[in-house]
Length: 134
Image (cartoon, rainbow, N blue to C red; front, side):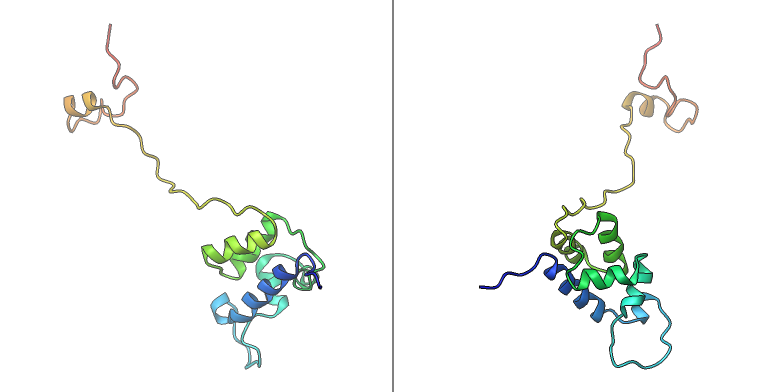
């Protein structure tokens, strides 16, 4: 019975995703025709902001515990979908981050102020909105 070393699945996934992403899709100039379509390790390392040696160690299964920030950088550089990104996090034994929430802030509208001062800027959104004068 053989056991899979920790990090082997992570390395295989990174290698697969790296090999499927063309230089042009990653925003890199296509200098000359290559036999391989995907990114080189050097190109992935540069895009992710990590060393080439670290990419090699990850792909070979010798580095098995990348940080969440490294996983996020790799996912961004490899242009992974949300499902693929979550899979990459799980392979690295990290809980995937929650989906990004909308940045819009919703504030409740005071009905009393909005109906009483329809169209007047002075009272709408003022600090006294909703408070009664004594």
